[in-house]
Length: 191
Image (cartoon, rainbow, N blue to C red; front, top):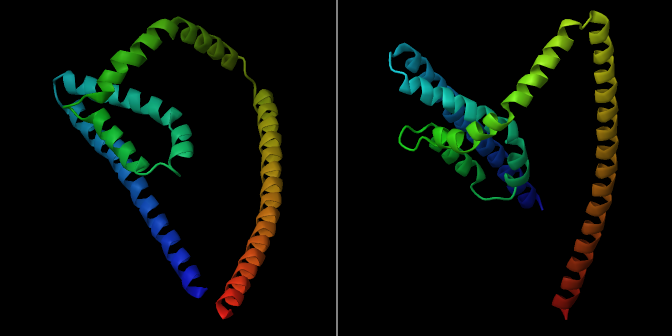
């Protein structure tokens, strides 16, 4: 029994280290390297490298905005998910493949052309509303947000407690089934 627990502990700590390395590699590839290249591009007189890196940052911002869904849905069961994600980030910024430029021209520019007037209208409306915002309004919205977050936190804690209780019940059932199976196996072995 202790061997199983030690093995489980070892594999979970290895998994934690692997996940940390994947996050580090992702940050280096997605942020550190492009930042360095963007800083260098700002020093050159050519426009092409400026456009390439600005396009990368726009596409990367869109990617980061929607990335939580695939991360949540795919990372736990899809083999090599983080490796594929790193490959995608490399493809986005590679001068050879120019993936960010491709996605921008194929999807983002047409979408922006179609929706730019609506977006500008909404932003102008929000800007006007912000001009008339008072400190009392901020306090009111802050209190509303606090109530919402407190309520959500309470609900999450309740769900976690119920889940913990159910997990404990299931673990006890599994343990009794395992014990019964073990006893049956020993009885059969004696025969």
